[in-house]
Length: 271
Length: 271
Image (tube, rainbow over all chains, first blue to last red; front, side):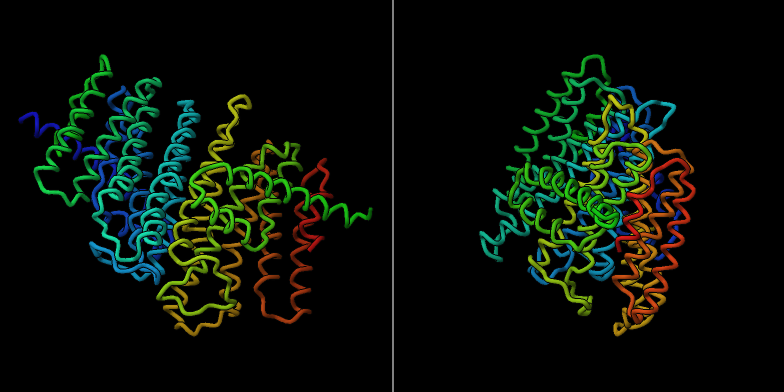
């Protein structure tokens, strides 16, 4: 098996574990009339590597996969909830592009994410293992994740994009506008990935310096993912930007003395 | 000062403290463009006694007001967020009665509550005081509150009301239908009040028996509040139902041996 294959199978194995964990957590509870659409919306959200990055950061600093699996699952839930609300059909939202498929009506696509977010927080709070004496770490991770999805994170970016930018630029605003891409990338993918990597490090028992290094690494991973999804520039320009971000990300990993960084590198080399 | 006045001033003093705490928490943070509507939506939500009940339960079992103020604030945030989303104008929601005033457009009334809920969880998680060694209590309260607002609580009830009941009964369904009142009362006011009283007891250091007694007391307080808001029955019938619920609530308080129950009684005697 080549190094590339081994790296991508590392990501794939984490993603499979998170998915299995989420499937078990979601299907076990009544009422099924709520959990069926919840299940669908969680697993039909576009791929996002933040949850897997959380587990990878935990393992990198010597933690076990199980220590980060609830936080990773919560991140996937928050990502799916915010994606659904971002594309909810509202009377004051002009048709946005790209159009997404709506499996359910607005009523369901409003209320199910409203149930997904507290469920994500519940998963986190329940992940506390008194035997491990890690309550403080879990509480810190709840603060990290709620901030990353809240008014100064993903929702703040959606608000900026859907409310403020439209009112100041008019409804015909071009979503490819570089300025807004920069803003929304920084708050969405970057913020979620930075938070994910920091949370994995916290749960795995990293020291403060390692946590901040992995937060910066996550920031670059998120930027690469964000630019790759949104940017309207030509391929060559994109290639250059991604290359610069990769270099910055790899430089961060150099600070992690004595840690095996090959596995987590796959998040930027595999893209 | 009569006993009635003293009881109602107890509730009022708690409510004022929660409001002051929330005003301080919300206005201190940028971006103001998000926090101004957040502030408005939080304070324009209809009155709900669950947050004050949380503090009263904490004080009843010997805890300090400050130990429950964050949980009470979080409950007020969750109540305001779910109220706003419950009345959000969607294309598949027929005009509901009573119509509520919409200070903002659907875009804002969708996204601000999306930021309010994680902010509520953040307040809770940050309320942990390492010096008090109460992380486990705080985590337990997060689980309690996220469950009370999630798919098996308030949002579950909204889903039942807006999605399931409409599809099975048609859009012309009469909101005064007793069966649905019972269901939504049980999940909304009852659930939030039961949770609030239990959380106050947990944070104040109550034993398990006291926690469950106060949970039941909260359930009756919520039922009284829920019936009083929704029920379409005549005054005499309502009076009888409320009287029965008051008796049940007072019976619960008899289990709390050695506790001064006068203050918390105002939640049912003041109504």
